Image: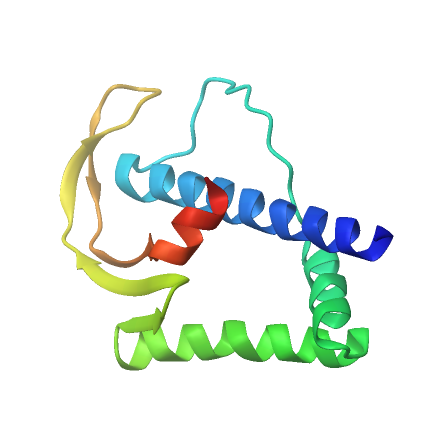
Length: 135
């Protein structure tokens, strides 16, 4: 029973981290800078080591093998985004890469106009199973 509670806690922390991470990335990509005001939100963050421990326990692997598997998965997502521009994990979500054109912005400190260069941005859309598991 104790290991089930531990796995459940890791699972909840992983999704809390995932949601907080993509909210921050969304803010940086769409607003163009880090938030300047302090935002007080209770966030439980799962570190990469904790995620590796969770994978090792869930799949009966050593931590080294689980770490290699996680690194391979992340590298695969990165390669898929570079090559095809889209990686779909059914039930979990879809990562996609889009081209954002350059635009004019305003420096929040000096209030002067500035040019924001064009760049590729990564977006994530959660799948139905992921949405249901978080709620």
